[in-house]
Amino acid sequence: MTLEEVCEKYEVAESTMKNNFPRVQKAILKKYNVKIIKEGRGTAARYIEEYETDNRADTMYDELKDEIIINNESLKMMNWDFMVFLAIVTTPMLVFRGSYEDFLRYVDCPVTKANIQELKKTLRSFAQRDLVNYVIDRTNINYFIVALYKQVEDDMKIGIEMVRTCKQLAVKYKKRSWVPLLKVWLGVQLLAETQPYTLKELAAITGLSEYQIKDSSKILRESEIFKTSRAYAGYQQCLGTKVDMNNKAFYLI
Image 1 (cartoon, helix red, strand yellow):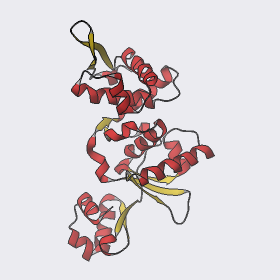
Image 2: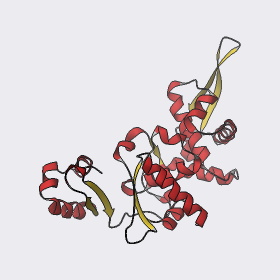
Image 3: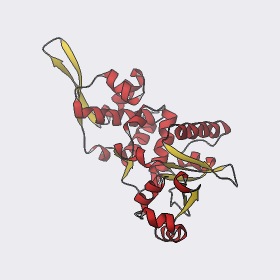
């Protein structure tokens, strides 16, 4: 993080951070259980959060947070990338610290060499796209810290219950992944604000194929997550799909 970002997040004056960093570092550690590490000098200095304990649940589905943050652009990510991104934002303080094996267990994914390599590739990609700060531990290259940048945070919020519901539906309908269900649910929720919407618009938002969208939509309709109908102009011209979201959907599973 920059000086401005760390001061805003922890409500510290920039002058205090510059002139008395050790005292501020100690105060933040005591209050938030977060150790601020300073790298570099002057205006080029960067600040890294090191969590003494992040109070992370065993898996992302067990987190107690009522809401997690997702920005619209992240809906377009490939399914693996989307799941990794989602895992980062479900963690306390939007930060994950641990080993690659820890991360895979957190997303309830098999711990294999192939998945570890894919995870590393995804984290590097996120860092290159300025979505996260990704730092590999200097003392053990199998450990890392990944944190969501503040500028990415506040575009859209979804409930963790949506994640749990989609995971349950994937098991119920024998689907290999719950991620398309969540992406369609979120995409429909977004497009409901400007409905009617078309299948192509939903595909553009989610990054899913038309087949995946139709398949996931069918499951979500059968589970009474939402209802859809066709919107027409006159008798012939179909304008797209209208949707009625079920606000009590979480109680149906």
